[in-house]
Length: 495
Image (cartoon, rainbow, N blue to C red):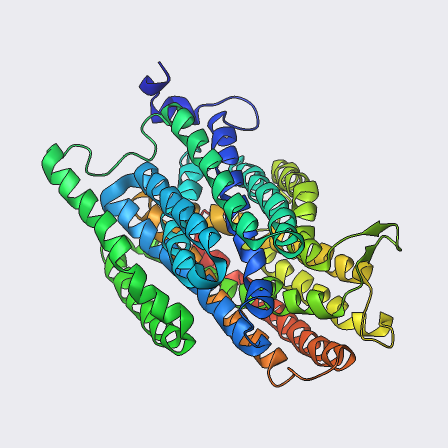
């Protein structure tokens, strides 16, 4: 009977959240366990097992993350035009499972090829489940931001579990087991989706569903073959980061050209909203370039410069595991509260608009990195510093993320016409790709030339870099708040 649900019936839900969001929540939670578990292991594994120097490890981390988010744009495009969101999600999950087990079979030998399967798989999975969340709400439903906030909690619950478990298992027991664990939980996520997708009614079905079955299958199989065929080329570009540069110099301009072409088919009002979405995406590049030091330079900072004690010595916690997980802990605690605060303010017509929220996110970002800088004042003679102060920095950064990321996902579905939802969700993640790419370059610049330095010397170099990032984030926030009236005007009736 659930298969007979119409879109109107789904969107006409009572209460705070539609029931379907809980199924998507669980699916995304296990996928994010796999993704963040893998992400948390990347830099530490490259430095300690592949014996790559810190500068190159930062660049390769940035390249891997950049390709992951770049492929979300491509995955969103194929979902829009051929597969639909459901098949795209399923195909992406299969590739992620294969990638995890390829690495697990021989981490040192198959690290890059397995990672490339994961990159392509995430590209097909990630933007499409987010888009289905947006489709659960009618235009103008003020519960949408809270829904994305809840969904973001699912993302971070998975990130917490994966971030804690995988890197800890890898460092303390076995890297083979750690990568296998990521694949196992991805299987759980995919099975969850298979058994609950019928409650989505028409949401996520293929745009070619009315075509003749043979013609539709030809396009779908072609997509599957093409996605696998690109993996060897992707492996070359990931392992040799100079090729990543060429890719990033190309994909952005080509994407904008295609987007501008699509915008010629829109009304003047729709085009203004699309320009606002593009501006939000550009500012998000700057935000993620700083924030995503988490898996790069901050991961190495945790490895070299943090004590393993937390809460004044009451707990012993692996610094890398906690660096991967602390942000997720704070998101889980505060995201639903922040979402309900937005609703409470909206009901009283006092909610800040999305542009102001973006500006506030940069101010929190600046504060967090200044606290990372301040850890130098709590270090001992060996260059080891307080994990408690480090954690406070992550608390501040988390509030910045909560002002930007779930709101950004929601904005893409508010500002774009429905026929471009998948593409615009992909554009949001493509902007993240450029942020990740820039994060790798910034991290390499911070750590470059310090391979033979002592931990105390590295502490000073890394924290000096974080101070610079704090200044740049502050400037970005001030600029964004200054131009907020212009962007708000472009957004029209979107709040």
